[in-house]
Amino acid sequence: MKKNLKQYSIFIVLTVIMYLFIRGFLFFIISVPSLSMYPTIDVGDRIFTTRIHQPEKIERGDILVFDSEELDETLVKRVIGLPGDKIETFENGEVWVNGSMLNEEYVAFNGTEYGSYTVPESHYFFLGDYRIHSSDSRKWDDPYIPAENLLGKAQWILTPWERSGEL
Image 1 (cartoon, rainbow, N blue to C red):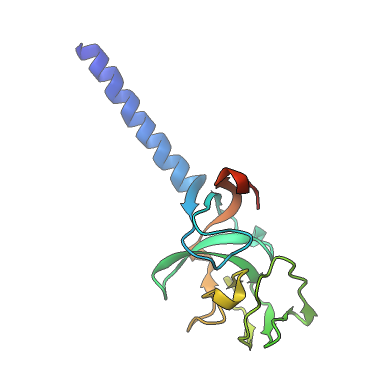
Image 2 (cartoon, rainbow, N blue to C red; image 1 turned 90 degrees about the horizontal axis):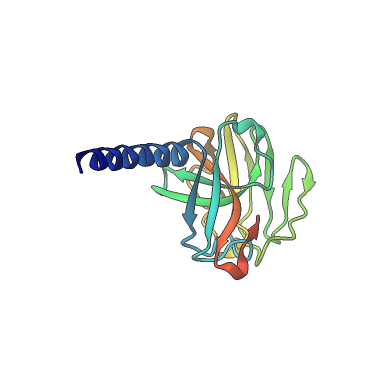
């Protein structure tokens, strides 16, 4: 009996260590609480997210999970501005990056906020896909998220099953 208890204890400890390693360094799963990324991501979708270890590989259009110190929340938004980019948002919903208009077929209900932004080094500018209802860089006091606050890249909708698929 003691031998079995010791083996079970070792198994449980190793399982917990593996779980913490995987969650901390490889991937995690989030449940989306808001409509800000609709229709790409809906409320309640569970998203498989890989950890970011090399922020320099982030591309415009990636959907990232990050911590907002200003809002004291973990958010999911689309990267629009990379370090050094000049972003302009217009009342008609157009978004221009470095003098070129973005073609954003994924956007639902453009917002009317407008402004001009220059993304600092090691920072990123984010917008939600459901612009009229998204609390994003256009509405924050500090519109830029530092690289150290980036948690992961949303890769796959796991559930609900009818919406499952790659992002």
